[in-house]
Length: 231
Image (cartoon, rainbow, N blue to C red; front, side, top):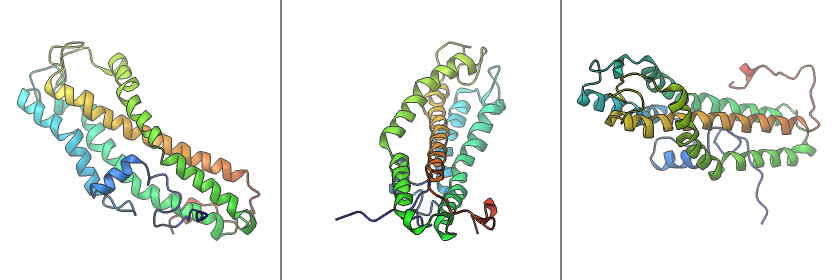
């Protein structure tokens, strides 16, 4: 029995660079999101509980939260910015991007940019993009890169050569308890989410390139302003 073509509706059954993939399904099972990619407050709370709260608690317990080392935890601006601002924004952006992308894909047929006779090819491009987006191998590779290349770059170019909340004895010394959580839990999570965004943006660009190879029916009256995508 032939498969139905992928539908580009706002119910997450069409092309969205946000839905799909192992992490998305894990969040669904944990009830951290629904198909509309809502409930961002739950996911923000989850990433903060994983990435930031343990660092704060362990630093307080070890006496490195506000003093005791050259760079205490709460005075390191990069750590606070990364986990309290950048990480939540990576999660919150999913809601906006999801609805904008789904609406943008719908415009191709709703405004007649894709002719009816080219609709099957358009649906095939959507299906190919969805398969690439949902690849388990890609997310597994991103996790591996977060723990290997990411750690190597941090060790070589980012780690501070002084006493810090994550290495109280100074550079290249045994890590503190907060340091172990920082290096092996918090930072890999942040790197993974960043690289996952980069990959999914590449999927979107690849989709647009494939669509651009179709005989598009563009007219001077065809609206192209992004403001129309979310209306």
